[in-house]
Length: 123
Image (cartoon, rainbow, N blue to C red):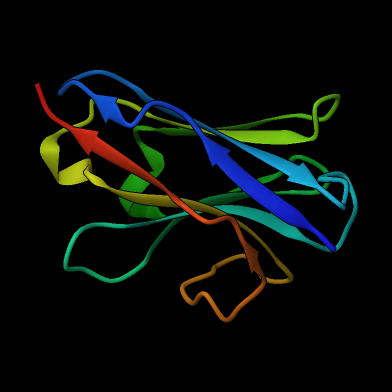
């Protein structure tokens, strides 16, 4: 059974870069036909799909985040990562990583999800 675990700092200062890592066990991130996504949920709002990387390393983006987001992977560690640059308090959210058989994931009933990690942007 696949398991995903997000890790990273819980507090980031405005204008800095938010960096999170998703560690995967029970499956390889190089195995198709899955997509490995980052999703977030700001307080009081719905889920926002940010972007994904597939089993061969191709990237897929939500245009709302593309200009300041990087998604990378470390196949030796079976991890994939998110970097969100120039953060503001509006980037405060619970951030999730997920595995799914589709590119865009906006429901926790689709695919397999990590438990999520709270990130607060504040000085």
